[in-house]
Image (tube, rainbow, N blue to C red; front, side, top):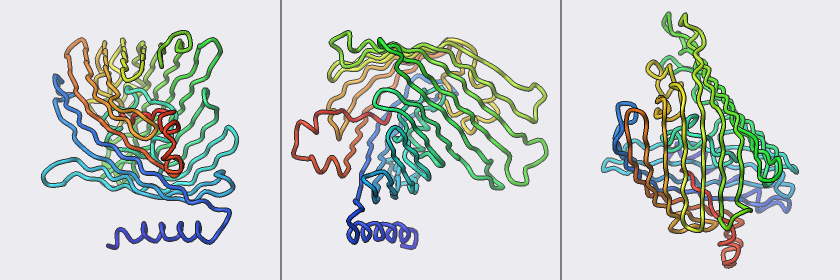
Amino acid sequence: MNNHRPVILFAALLLSLAITGTAQELVWNVDADVVFNNREGGDEQTPDQTFLFTRLAPELGVALDEGRHTFKGGVAWYQPINDGGEGYKVLPIVYYQFRHRKWQVALGAMPRRLLRAEVPRYMWSDSLRYCQPRLRGALVQYGDARNYVELALDWRQMQSRNRREAFAVLVNADWNLGAGIMAGGHVQYNHLAKRKDAPEGEGVNDDVTINPMLGFDATRYTSLDLLRVDVGAVVQMQRCRAAADGWLTPSGFVADARLRRGWFEARESLFAGKDLFPLYPQFGSELNLGDPYYRSKFYSRTEVVAHVVNTRFVDLTASLSFHATNHVTGFWQQIACRFYIDNNIWRHRRDKGYLRGERLRSTF
């Protein structure tokens, strides 16, 4: 009971503020996922395995000054579905959010869904998206409905005698240059420091990703709901400061093509170049957050997705993913359902046009 006492007190405080004042508005949302993902045809780096889990993330807060200032708290409960009920995580969500014209700022432990960018999988793997739903630090965003630049700080691990200090700084951008041409990309600095009282020889590690992209959104020239192609380069700069070989700088070419019409969606992602994670054998996913498939010289990921139900508040999908490298092939089957509701959707719950007017974005 003691573990839940801070959450109960926080909820009571927010509720009392909303009731006693006229300038405050009680805001809330519930974000939930159910995912089944069966992976076949991998190797030692991408082994055959099955993910089956639920995730529930309720939030409650108070908005002031017509939504300019918002303070929210809640939890993200990740629960693998197994007989023993083991392996679950209950992670706190507490953050402040400021909105003014084209600016948005968030501070605290916040859900990753606040990011506008879909971070590529050579930077964040599927498994990371499954198991770590939060950013812990700060998020600054500037933009409008079509253009944005965002900067995020994610403090991933605090230093202890058993755990290294780790944080990541991420910049995403997507800007419309006109005539459907988009420019942007991603830059990430990932830092893995020493443990407290670390043994001699344990070094500090750096991982830098530079990923400029140029895109063409041809949707308006077609009858499709989405048709977009992005191409670019990805450069990794990695080093272990305790080693003598200095910076390692693998690079490669990346391309991504997406097509959607109604319930059907297809996507192709390509990579060709050098092993993007040369330090992976030493530090694994503690340093390199991306998908180990990108350790190959060539990688193709082809996805076919059926949006069985897709409205403003639910996205139920069934998908097949085909993976091919210069060494192995893989085949993933996934069924996923995301359900999202907040005080605005609830207010318009009887308006069928509103509920069907905008599609909920998948988490995975």
